[in-house]
Length: 508
Image (cartoon, rainbow, N blue to C red; front, side, top):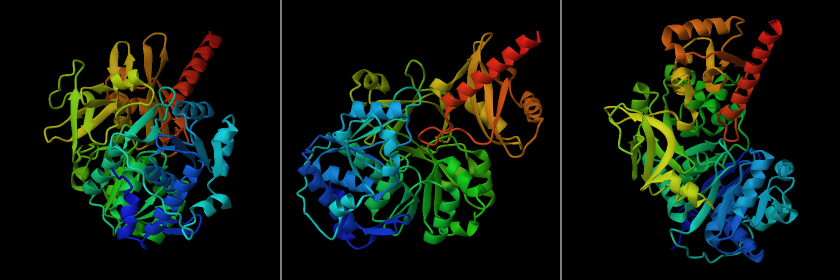
């Protein structure tokens, strides 16, 4: 079957602006995108790349990511975008595990590839050599390879928050199904413009934003690296119809000196995903007449659920209901469906769900219950059918035999006027096994913040759920996908707890 949809899109929208890169000062039409991909497919074939081979790219947001993906689809190769924010050990594990044949890269990040075999580091995507290969004024037509819908189209690796990254497989059917779902759900059409500021190596920015817009024939503005102030400038210049971002990105826009509400006059909807909402940010946008709605997905199933603007205003904590062609089930420990209001593990089923993990049949088997992929997220559903993510199963804190959901503690903390952002994690306790702690970013400097927060929490939550330790930060450490790095925070908390114990020992 032919999955070369960029060629079809180019036929209908040959001269329309598809991708604009303000950083490079370039603009590419749909016709250009197709020709660039055909030129690159020919080049890859000349290098010996064949159907089923894995080809990688290691770059910030750039049209080259689209060049390689579309070329891979034409050739029947496997597209591998590599997260350039990963640590060296994690990057090496991705390269070894994927058996990638060659890697295109941005020169600025090539130092992160030290230790990778020279023969794999193929070409700088910002070089004249690369530009000459893909130059749309010099067209080398390519006959697209026919593939099966079940064939492997792409590998996208997890962020490795609980171990080394795992390769999430996407078949051609699952990879194409997701943008169709997104475009139908958000009613995206060819008149739409958006700005991509989330990393294009990640499903939120790529599968849920970039591909649906291009499939619908809209215009994509690239932001090479995210910066709140720069994004505000791009908003003023391009007047996008919608944004999909991580919550911390909306926060960075709000606190930038050049934030201007006029930039949002063309906005139809704002969506956040990738991590827990920031209540302060939602309230601020609500006060300005805009509702940031929650979307839910994961690397293994890019879009599963989304709220609506109207429902989001009433239920800002909900991720809404399943989108078209998606099923969910919330399971108890015996894999029975829970009752309304009860908490269980969320399972998802749909054509955009991964068939499994690359080279990990045992991990794949554990990740599924029948046709349902087990997300590892604890969730509940209310009487209206709206779903709420409660927490990650693996992040549950067990202190003195009692279960504590970090999200519940964070929700209470976020209501205090001193707290701009909070992340709750467990730390080692010789007495309780684990104890509750909270890292906080404050709205203002207050030397008595710990006492004030402790008093507030004692009035609003059960005693065993109260943080025993606070850590004040100017900003949260983030992992490779811009989520709060909870492993790093746990390390900080354990170090602080150890110092406090040593201090007491010295006094005694």
